[in-house]
Amino acid sequence: MRIDKFLKNARIIKRRTVGKDACDGGRISINDQVAKPGDQVKPGDIITIRYGDGEQKVEVLELLEHAPKDKAGDMYREL
Image 1 (spheres, helix red, strand yellow):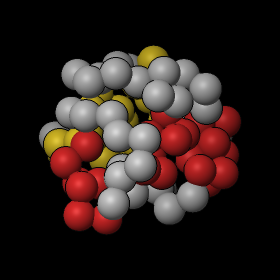
Image 2 (cartoon, one colour):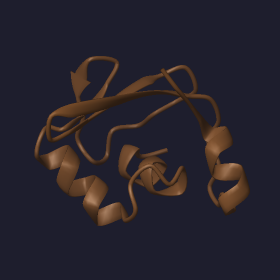
Image 3 (cartoon, rainbow, N blue to C red):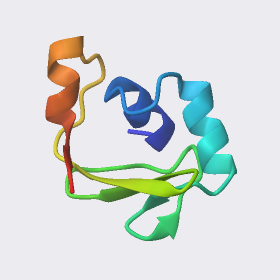
C-alpha cells in the first residue's frame, strides 16, 4: 500500500493530499529513509512523521484498503 494512502486510511493524517505534501516536504520516513508518496509500506515498517518541533513514530501492523473509524487504530502501533 502507498504511504500516502496508509496515512489517510489509518487516520494519522486527515487527507491523502496532505500526506503527499508531507512526503514531498521530506517530513515522512519509512525505516529511516525519506519517503516519496508512492513508496510502499508493509507490516513491520517503522514510519516517522515530523510535525513542527516533534515527531511521531508508528509501526505498521496491518494494511486495510477500507478501514472504518474503529479499525483504523488497529493498523499501527505508536512507538
